Amino acid sequence: MKRVSYKFLTLLLISIMLLAACTEKKSSTESREKPENAPDTWIADRTIKGLVFMSDGDVSADMNPEIAAELKKRTGITLELQGITVEDSTEALTSGLAAGDLPDFIAYYLDHSGRPEMQILLKGAREGMFHDLTPMLKETKIYSKYFEDGYLPADTKNNVMFREEFKGSSYFVHMAIPRKPGTVSRKYVGGPYILKDIVDQLGINPAEIDTHEELRDLAEKIKAANLKDVNGKPITPIGPTAWGGADRDFIFNDLVWTGSKGEKFLKDKDGKIKHESQTDYGLERVNFIRGLLADGLLHPEFFTMPENKAKEGVVNKSFGIVADFHNYLPENLDMKYVPLGPIDTAQGDYQMELAYKSGYAGWSIPTTTEHPEDIVKLADYLASREGKLLSQYGLEGRDYTLDEKGNPIVNKEVLELKANDPEAAAKLGFRGVRSYWAEHLGYTDIDNVADFGEFEYGANVAGADTASAEKIIEMWNYDEKLKNAKVIDGSSPKSFIYEYENGDNLNIALDTYNENLLRAYYSKSEDEAKKILEDSKKLLEKSGLEDYIKLIEKKEKEGTTIRF
Image 1: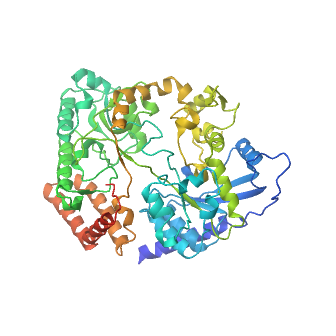
Image 2: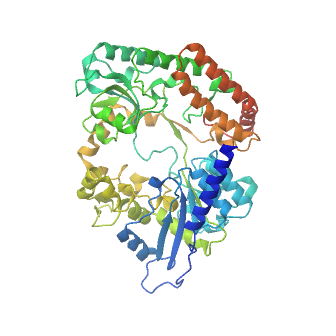
Image 3: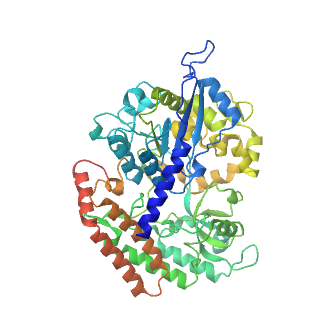
């Protein structure tokens, strides 16, 4: 009862805060008549207000005044964003829609149709809370691509935007859609890394370490070598991620019953879909990790270490192997760490896997908004190359110049400020310096190389800042792996969980299974670990796991591709 009462009071408080935040928020048109010298991109002289149901770092509500003035000059629009003041964005979205007093548009997290936000949004759409965007989107230059065959990934098209129940109407716009299928926006080499000093001293080829057994053998050799960090302290053979403690699969991929989606569903050799709890993989992984901990090969805070301590360990070379790293980390400009593996998977040899296309986040326009076409036009402008140049690179002259091809050359002073004072750089107000005000409406149809001549912001002039990243890309044989990548257009196993009658309880049970794995890693005995996993399995069975698997199988038979 205490938990229920607390949750009720929390939701009530959120509703009150949202109502207060939205007071006097309705935008009124100052002028719909286009000024004589206005550019073709002019929309209307009005203020557009948006409420963003995301964590504070993803909102970027405070626009740089010069950027805001330039947007006003080009479109006539003054954009005002409001974030939420609570940590749980999903609960805030629930309360916001329940309150019903919303600004001109809302934005929210929405990686895929299986996220809990989708059910909240669907309820709102079914109750007539949002404008049908289909007619307006069809009249745009960029978003009209969403109606072309093959442009949208299957989950976005069938489960998010153009659901059968709405008969062609669309109430949610899915964002961050790549322009071309099977492409990457950056050459990102993540996963485990190893100290270059260890590679040289032990004379190993880190790319040949591709199983958990080989990883353990290497960890034992690192321990036996009695190596010291920069402070003269013994190093730990295997440390946590560069961002702190977390249960990431990279160092024991072949002991995790999952594909690239990480949801711990997979098909066995007979084609039967199973959850990890129905296999021996969970216990095998628990025993492997317990053994590493017992033998001092895995840092005792591997799953719990705070980020600042992990960063300190990376800088001081305190970890022989870092569980998760990537090639753009500023702490590794000197390449003291190099990629290890990649480790194989439960499906066999490692193969890069890419989504046909992927989506991230979304936006909607409440039916209470006047002239919703203005918001759609603004979104389309921000998604254009001209709009992206402003929102991702800032102002010509102040922040960049143009080369002979019309591509931006970032001013070195901006890159130096970003490296030395990130907070001050962010105040310049564009994506390249981590200001995301335009993400909520215009970050889609993505092809950075085609639009700006570079994968990464500032890569053409960054020099030493990206030299190590490029060397790692070459060392990891990225281009060859990309060439042979498996491209899949499909829905994840959990995409349908809220269609399932007992979906809420099953989702809690699936989360509980993952939480209980952490308990099992630190259990005192194998028997205790077995008991923890058995209890989790029983909870999943009680919550309808088998019936949900039947639903996934039914979806497959109906033609839905499942991306495990």
